[in-house]
Length: 331
Length: 294
Image (cartoon, rainbow over all chains, first blue to last red; front, side):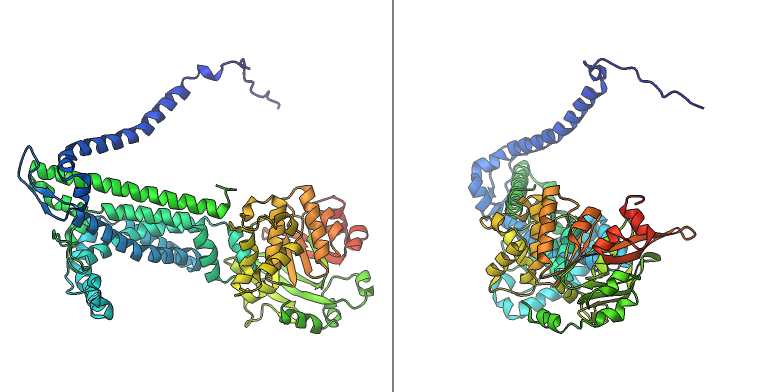
C-alpha cells in the first residue's frame, strides 16, 4: 500500500521567513530580559551612591575607606558624625580570606576524592551530602555556629593555637573569645565549602579522559594524575569556584553578624571580636538616624566595589593562565 | 637506556615461543620460522565488564622488535585487548581480566606487580592525539619528570622528539603549546612523549584514525622505523595500514551469542601479515579481508 509522501508547497526564496512574526517578537523579549539585569544593577548602584554621597563628600572617599573611627550622628539633614569604615572593611576581608584559605583546599580534596577515589557506592551519598549542606539556610548555620561550634570546636582550637609558640604573634595571641573574627571565619568556611566543592567536582569531571589516560599510560600514579593533570587543567575553574565562594563570604550577613562580636575596635588578634561590613549594616540599620543610614549605604557601595574588584581580578587571573597554558591555540 | 630493560632484553629466553605455541591457532607457516624472540605472551586472556565478556580466551605471542597488528570488525574487543597489555583496563570500573600476560618472562597480572611500573615499560599511544595543554617541551618531559629525572632532560626531550621524527619541525618552538601543532604533529608528539619514559613495548590504539592520509603515512613510516628499537602492537581499522606496516597480523571477530544477547571478541588467527592477507587459514579472515563482511 503506497502512500504518496506529504508534499510541502515551495515558497519563493525571497522573504518567506520574514512573514513569520515569532522571530522578531522573541528577539525583543530576550533583549528585554537581558537588559533588565543591566538596569537593575545600574539602578542599585546609582541610587545607593546618591544616598551615600553626603558621607563620601564629608569624609572623602579615601578618608572613608581608611578612617578608623565610626561614631554616628543623629541628624536628619546633614552629616555630623565621623565615618571611618576601615575596621569593617578589614573585618570583612580578614574573615573572608581565612574562610577561603580553609575551604578551598578542603573542597578540592573532597571533589578529588568523590570523583577519583570514592568507590561507586559512596559517590552518590557524598555528592548529596555536599549539596544538602549548600541548601542549609544561613540562619541555621548561625545557630549551630553560635550554640555548638564556637563553644566546642573553634574556641578550643583557638586556645590551642594561642598556646603554641604561634601565639606569640599578636595576630594569633589570646585571650580567645567565643565571638571573634575566628568564629566568623570558620562559619564562613563551612558555608562556602559546598559551593566550591560542587563546582570543583564539575570542573574536575570535565578533564578529558584522554589526558588522564595519557598520563596513566606513562606510568603516572593516581596521585600524580590528580596533582599534575586534573588540578592544573582545572585551574581556571578552581579560581572561579574560589571567587564564587569569596563572593558569598564577603556578602554573608546573618551568621557573621551573630558570631563576629560587633566591636568597633580593630583588634589585632583574630581570636577577638571585631566587626564586618555586612554585620554592621544588619546590626545597626533598624534604629539608625538618616545620616547613619547614608553611612551604611556608603558601606554597601564600598562592599559592592570590593566584590567587583574581586571578580575582575579573578577574570584577569583566569585569562592570563589560559593564554599561558594553551599558547593561544585553543580557547 | 634503562639498564633493567637492556638486561631483560639480553636474558630473554628465546625458547619460550615453542612452549606457548600450543595455544596459538594452528599455522603451518609460523612453525617454519626460526626460533622467534617472544616479548609478550598472552595466555587465555579474557576481559569482562561486569557480567559481560568483552574478549574471550585470547592467546598469542608478540615478537620482539616487530609490529603486530590487531584487526577485526568493530566491537571485536581489539582495543580492549590492547589495554590489557599495559593494565589500562584496571582503570575501568568493573573491568576484570583473567588469564595471563607475560612480559619479558614476568606475568604482569601477578599480585606483586605494580601496574604503574608496567605502564612505564609498556607505553601507549591513543586514537585521538591527546597532548597535554602544556608546552611541547613539558609534554615530552612529563613522564621523565614523574620518574624524577632532572638532569639531562633537554637531551632526553631532544632525543625523544628526534626519535618521533618531530624534532626538526618543533626545535625552534619547544615552549609553544603542544596543542598549537597540527593533528599529525600532535600524534608524533604523543609518540615522543611515550618514548621519553623509555618503554620497550609501545601499544598504539588506532593512532591514525583521526589523521589525514599524509600525516598517516608519516606515522606509518615512523612506526616501521621504530620497530628496530621497540616492539609495537597496533590496533587498526584500516586493513591497508595493517598490510603496509605490520609483520604479523591478528584477526579478531565477534562471537554472537543470541541466547544471552552477548557479543564477545575472539581471536580467529594470527600469522605473518602476508599470509593473513593472501592465504588466510580461516574463511572468516578471508571474508573480512576481501570485504565480504565487517
